[in-house]
Length: 351
Picture 1: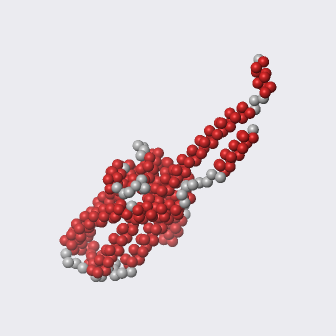
Picture 2: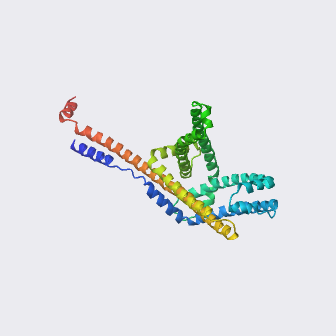
Picture 3: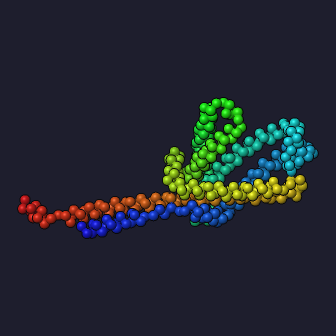
């Protein structure tokens, strides 16, 4: 009986003092930053891919603009400082060329969308085996192997975000309909409605952006055939570990916002009225693109490390619960042996 009580006390103490070993989001952020630095070859590769893609796209567009506008100084004047009169004259004179350029820009956007989806599979495969050295073959094989799954996940989450946007848009619209259609004619009422609805919408939308990141990571780690399970599994992971996964995402978002604000400030604090300023701005733009790629790598790298920490913690908890169950079975058998009285044994022998 004493052995049983001591064993029970020991198991109770271990379960009471069992702590959550999941990584802190600050630690995950800094480890994600260091992981991105360690994979600098991948970082440079992604920058070169973006740069080459931009060059391939930009040269035909600049040639088209040059052919259509000739020696007009209107594009350069618009570049240095926006003027509505110059813009209106430019559109009246070269509206057809702008329409052609906009049509090509939409095609370019679609191509870049598919390129980004293609690359994310390779990035996550490299981060999955983060202790290994960067390998170009592993990167390209991961990009190719996971492309269709990443594309399907992206489409599913686009549908989810569309539903969320529709829900909040409908709520905002019908809430104002009850106040009368005249409320929609007031700019102050519309602004107040946006101030109330937009923050709530952004919280829900950003939550599902986090879920989307962890769903991609889960697909690369577990390699499931069906993508419905990764969707709900990643939702469960993010929801249960909300105090870690969501602040980590916000920290990465703040990092990007700071970099973007610095670039935006530098861009509009310098006049683009000479070739030297344009060249400088081109260099600053390349630094911004390189930094933007870095923030993407830090976000995916830190999220991967957080995912691995959560999975490890769940595995340890599961193993601990199995050990507790086995110990309880042993204790039950010991208890049966202890409580068998000698009189009962003698009575059974007589019978």
